[in-house]
Image (cartoon, rainbow, N blue to C red; front, top):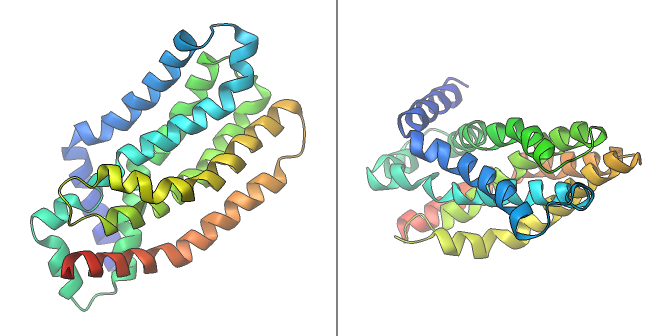
Length: 222
């Protein structure tokens, strides 16, 4: 576990030094929620109905926006090759890097989501479902997106390719996350949706690091 915490601390320090990478997803998230009423309708009742989907789509796209930089700097300076050649378990290294990415992207997006919910007139009953669904769903987005980032790390312009690879895998998280918020708004039980999000997160924690490690070896060796 010393390796895990060392990698996590290193990635967090690097993220704070590159503050533009830290702020870009949050600014994008805010822009989506701010421009949506201007392009559709400022009617509070209409916005309240669409708020769960809008917030979740914004969080998904903001997470996707930051995925290309997950392994890019380590690949450019040779750190990634040294990591692959070291005898340390790559599973822990990858898991620590994904956790650092979520702490710098998914967690701030989750904390910012209630503000956007208020901007979109989301009823107070849906705030709890919004926060919990994002807490369960955004780590899954980071884990799945890291697979695409690992597969395209050797490409100079892999951002678009990442989107094509991982967007189909993001759809179940988007559906169950927005449905959980909608259920909370209407007073229906949301435990089933949260259980499905938790199951996808547990499955991602177990399987995604293995897939990411294999993708990194393929990308770097290729």
